[in-house]
Image (cartoon, rainbow, N blue to C red; front, side):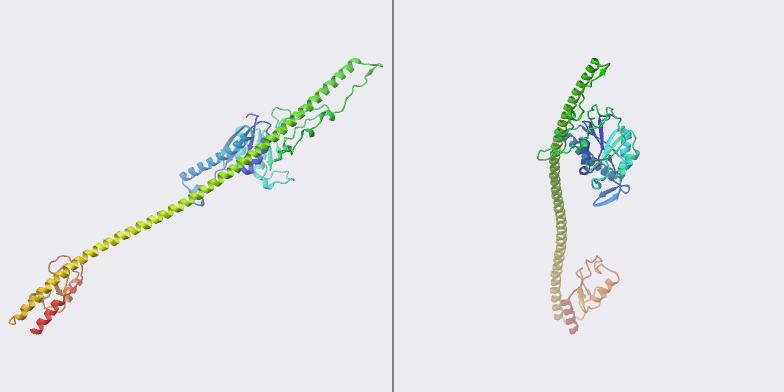
Length: 443
């Protein structure tokens, strides 16, 4: 693994983890940032407003939802990388899928051979000024199980809470550039870049000022060449060497002071860069907010469109039902018209028959010698004189009671033609009944 890469473990909540990323960028020392992310597939999958266990769904539905999860994960990683590049830092990303986030982080540390890692110590809401220990179960697990070769810094709300492991002092892969040595100090102290605060919006510095940096020139003790007496005389050679050493020490102090000034200027430039990054971040947040508002408006418009579409579909169904009803009524009207025409024909036929009956009656009245009843006075079935003559749908007249008995025995055909009758309706033949009654009175 390249020692010039600084890894930072970030989750899917960009707003919550951005403080960790910002701290990492401020303290990266120019190293490439590698964002590592553990994608944890959801066990419950939302469908139609309800969540179902993934094990109960078809493979096709689970595969489709997993693809959506990966796309959302990639958008989150792209947002982290965009934030880094806006500040001017080199950035890349690595991710894996695991059911356990903390185990996934340890797995990536082993796979990639990570030596420097930054991750959260706890959620920001758990932060307090007295916080000294890790509060997150994930952080505790990684701290206990990660390889000892990995130097891990745990951050909460933009502050360093805990450090696990160390990098060999004086090696080329130290996290921060060391402070300059002076001749009166036996240890080295790294510059605490964490304490550099961001530039205020009014243009003033809230962090380190150049005039607050250590003044090496005044802090070092003034050394004067001692009077070295040897056998009552000054050792000129030793005095010359001391004077030369004093000159070199003065030059070293001056160079240290100049280097301190350069570092102060670099820190000020870094603060200005951070200010610009914050402005860019605000602009990005506003753009994301506008995009979210537009997406919400589009979703609302789409919902309204779906409602109108449903209403239109319902109206089309109602129209189709009305058209079907109209077609059915038209069919019934046509059948009724046919029945009316049939009845009209039968009425005409009955009128003609009545006229015939009247003519025959007249002929019977004129012929007193004829005592036998006419054949049409007789029922075709019983051959008796009809008392209550009725016309059936076959056009013949029968005794009503006899014809009903015919129907009751299961017949639905004409007794005269043996053809199936359209219906069992009977029409009283009043004219024939009057003629029969008149004939019976005379005979």
